[in-house]
Image (tube, rainbow, N blue to C red; front, side, top):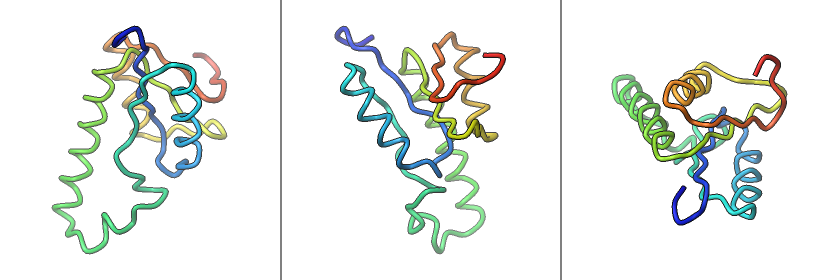
Length: 114
């Protein structure tokens, strides 16, 4: 909590750009400080990757993955945007990291076994 506000980091595939934006608005209006992705690698922002050599691409993706874990560190909980139940490899690693660090986990859509 920061100043009485719950801090929430959004996690999920960046192909769900519209859902990220909707969740950010909804949570903000509910009184949360929302931390989101810096760019939508799978749902736009193609210009970021254009012309990037393979080595730079690999380092950039690793940096973005690590940076998102630091965003989870700053949060009280994560909000998983799992449209149609989809949870990719990166999001799974973020969920596991959140569990390991004692963060709350909320899903957009119900998940069996959670």
